[in-house]
Amino acid sequence: MVGLLAATALSGCAAFEKERKDKEVRRLQGQAAYEQALKNLQDKRVSLGLVSLQQAIALDPDNGVYRNALGVVYLDLRRPAEAQVEFQKAVELNPADPEAHHNLGLSHAEQGRFDAAIAGYRKALTLPTYTTPEVAYNNMGNAFFAQGRYKEAEEAYRAALQLEARMPSALYGLGMALSRQGRQDEARGPLRAARDMGPTSPFSQAAAEALKALGEASPGAGTTR
Image (cartoon, rainbow, N blue to C red; front, side):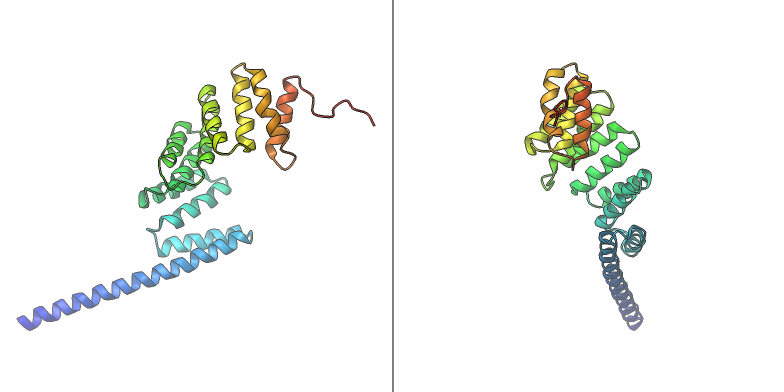
């Protein structure tokens, strides 16, 4: 009887050790697939990157980093509902990951669920490891603006600009939020700043058009050679 119990115990230990080793092998394979995905994405091979990320998750489904990365790809592919699933899983696996919370907010915003988006941005801002809070404030401003909550949008854009004064999207957003509140004279300042950042910013032309709507000509307009 004692021998039988000992044999059973040894068998159980062997099975546990095999399971542990198999799990470690899958983890390493998942890491290799993830690294390959990053290389594919860097090389603009999005389809291959997507497949590699899916493989990484199949091998290591409890890795929040892989889930977050897959969600970002889905967002880039304009598939926000699928992105939301991955980001939700990422925050469940790692509640202290600010990027996953922020990205979850983005996926909600892309689907027009702005209250849920704002909640995601706010959660990211509460986490001390978040390195780009100005991005969350800017996106929060966009969500408030989309809801017609222009004063709250103004406050969010100002918070972003306190952290990054030369942020063209926040400057443009602030100008538009002020304009929608009937504060056109105040709106011109941030709109000019966004416009003058040059043609490399997509917000420069938008700011120039907004200023034109406010009756202000572009610099150099009307000059002759």
